Image 1 (spheres, chains in turn blue, orange):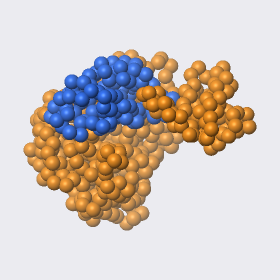
Image 2: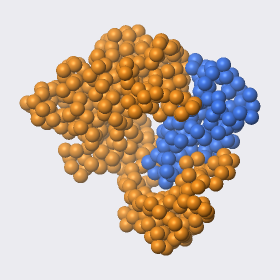
Image 3: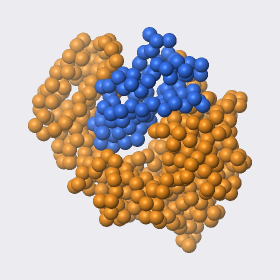
Image 4: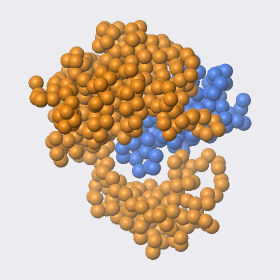
Length: 102
Length: 441
């Protein structure tokens, strides 16, 4: 098993209570393998203690990247959340903790 | 060709990179994007307390540094630093210019403030998330598009100051003006929107918020340069930064920013266009140079997004650190004590152990025991005294809690909640006002 951190980078964004996570392989050739293994279902399972709603995945073959849109992930959203990281900015590295088989 | 620089990606952004861009960028326009989702609601509260305020608190400082350079180099400035009060912001700019002995023409764009409409038509608006009935709405601002900035640009003003405008529209407007693009050419509007989206967060395109030592190396972070785009009439663009500045502009940094805060990349919705990012092409063109092409668009939506701020009381917080043997055990005891002392007053308390599980609400199987841990507790209330009490109880752990606690801190912050809704475009009435040193038109 290989940690996504070894293979790809990610940036987190937020809108209300929605968290967006990009997943960008260092080597573009790995895009197909990530697309196969890092499904919306697997990401939802990996982030189950963080994301309460649905996870949608969008494919960006033009830049060899995936985008995950996670609903109900920010304890109610930036402005009223009691959490430390109200934007969920650190959560890109939560995604990169996931392990896949190469 | 049009050269547009990005001089700020948020209201508290660094000033030096913008000064450098204005001085050396050979820019046509410098854009400062300074409004986050709730910035404007907080600004509205400042305006309520003093009607001359409500513009960006750093406006005066930024203008003082930039104005002489902008005028000397003939660079026009577009900014949303007007926040809740673009006219007030313009007046402040005039005041600063007068004081510095400079002549300047400023155009203030208004119309985004739709609070009266929202207050009287709230029932017809679907808020997301739902707004509870007794909520005290403090602000309602529509995201206006590039077409509302165009008349202000056409006045020839040196500075165009707006309130709430969709971020990419701040960049798209000068492109439409310069290249005389049609507001019906969806593909061109989409291409310009992609450029704007990539530039709007300043240093996030040039290696800021990217570096990870040993994995994603970026050199010269301390002197991180902000990006600029050389846009052509066909909507293609070269993204670059000034030589001699730190940071990096690579395929990787651009990819991260292209997807930043995007929901469906095939339908990125702005007031100007629905842009498809899945046809965007990126190409390396030498060091710190990325050539951008592609991108398609569809007709803009009929409705405009409105961001509504409501009073959500106060959040009180307290923190204290434990270190050395059994730090975790002592921090957890502190947590138990505080919860028992506050439980009757607060329905919900958030307890965090910083250094362990606070950021990711868990640790994905990592079981190492931290040498030190910072206990933190937070709660929300409409009563200021109760909010203060949280920090006071944490501070009191010094003499009423576990051994060896140190570095207690307490905070109280006013909370403005944000929900959004859609309203018909014709309920927003964009307008502008031109002011020059010496008088108001």
